[in-house]
Amino acid sequence: MISNAIQYKETRELPLASVLTLYRANEWSSAEKPELLIKALKASHSLITAWDGSGLVGLGNAISDGHLVVYYPHLLVLPEYQRRGIGTKLIEVLIARYAGFHQHMLVADGRAIEFYRKCGFERAGKTEPMWIYAGHDH
Image (cartoon, rainbow, N blue to C red; front, side, top):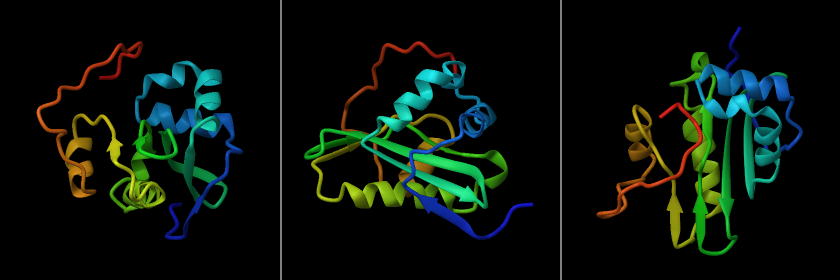
């Protein structure tokens, strides 16, 4: 049962099984490296989680130099909880935390592009995204 009382927390106490369920449900390949994934999330500059009772239903994180630049690498919501404002709330909390920073960055593809546009993000000038990527989900 899905409740309307989603709670947002800044905890780094994350049950590995719940994290893996969230990432697998969204078909993110980082779920294939569970120990590294949980370490990475716990080492984030900021980590915001969404809970329905005791169940993890979403999370967002940020990596930052703490002064000028922030990068938002992960924003996930369980598919059955999507389109209820949870992802929007997660990114709003993160953006507010870094208000006044010179640069907020992320990489988006597919349906996420329109979502992030609605959150105020836009294409970064004439830049082209580039990476060395070990995953297979993009």
